[in-house]
Image (cartoon, rainbow, N blue to C red):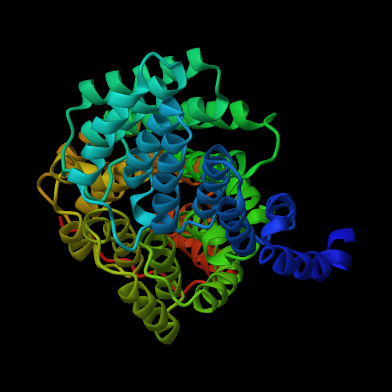
Length: 503
C-alpha cells in the first residue's frame, strides 16, 4: 500500500533522471528498485520493463548482465518465451563484455535449455541448430567453473537428449541416455550449491522419467522440487522456478491419479500473486484437473477467469493452454451445452493444432465425451494408436488415463482385443487409484461381475472422482442406474447414454 502512494512519483522521478547524464547512477538504482517493487506488487509487465531500463542505465557491463538476467526471469514468469530468450542472450553478451566468461557460458547454456524447456511459451520457437550453437559456445567458455558446467550439462540434457519433449524435438527418445544426462545435470547442480539450478535439473530428470514411463517417479521428483524451493527467498528467478514447479507437481500428481493433491497444488498456482495479470496462465492447470475429475463447478468458475484474461492479453496462441481449453469444451459437451462447447472449440482452434491435440489430451477428452454419449466404437477409434506409437504425446499426465480409457472403450465396443487392452492397462496403471478403478470397472463389465463393478464406485469416491463413481452406477443398471443418473444430474451433467455391449 505504501508503494502505491508513491509509485507515480517514483516513475516521474525516474523518467526525469534517466534523461540526465549526470544522474545516471541514481537513475540506475531507482530503476532497479522500481523493478523489484513492481515485481513484489505483481506488476510483472512493468517489472520486466524496469529491469530492462536498469540494464540500459547500468554503469558497468556486469550490472547490465545482472539486470538482464532478472528481466529474463520475469519474462519467464509471464510465459513470454521470446523475450526471455532475447534477454538471456543479451545477458551473455554483457557478461562477456565484463570479462565474466563463466557467467556468459551459463547464460548461453540457460538460453539453450529454456528454448527447449519452455518451447510452448514461444511465438517463434528457436530452431535446433541455434540451440546447438549456443551449447557449443557455452562449452568453450565454461572452463572449470562449477555453475557454468552444471548449466552446460542441463542444456545438453535439454537439447541433445530432448529431456523436456520440446516442440522442436524428435517424436521419440533414447531414454537411457536422457536419464543419464539428466542425472548428471542434477549431480553437477548439487555440487555447485545452487538450488535454482538444481530445481531446473530436477525438472529435466522428472521429464526423463516420464519418457521412461515411470509415472510415480515423476510425481516424487516434482514434490522434491517444491521442497527444494519452499525456503528460497522471493526473487524473479525463484518465482519463475516455483511457478513452473507448481505446474509440474500438479500435472505429475494428476498423471499418478492423485486428484485431491493435484487440485490442491493447482489452486495454489491459480492463486499465486505473480500470475495476477495473467489469469489464463494461472488457471490452466486447475481447469485440466477439473476436466479430468469432471468437476463442473470448478471448471465453469475457472473458465470465466481464463477466457476474460486470455482475451485481455490479446488472445495469444500458446499451445500450453490447449489442454485446459479442450477440457472446458469437453465439460460443456458432457452438459450438452452445444453453444458453449462450440465457443470453446473456436478458442481451441485459435490456439493451433499441435500433435498432442490429436494423440494426447485431445484423444482423452474426446473419448471421455464419446463414452458418456454411448459412442464406445468412436471412443476406441479416437484412441486407436497403441501408447508406444504416440509415446511423446501420451506420456506425462496422459499415459494412465489414455490406457485406462482405451481399455474401457475396447470393452464397451466389444473389441476382440479387449482382454489384451485390459492386461496391458492393468500393468501400466498399477498403483494409480483412479486409472486402476477404471480398468477394474472395465474388467468387471467384461466378466459380468456385478459385485466387482459396484466396488469400483467406492474406489472412485475415495479417489475424489464423483463423476466416475456415478458413471459406474449407471453402468451397473437397475436401481443402481437410477441413483447414478440422479448423481450425474446433481453434478450438472446431461444424462449418460448406455448401449448394450456386443455379445
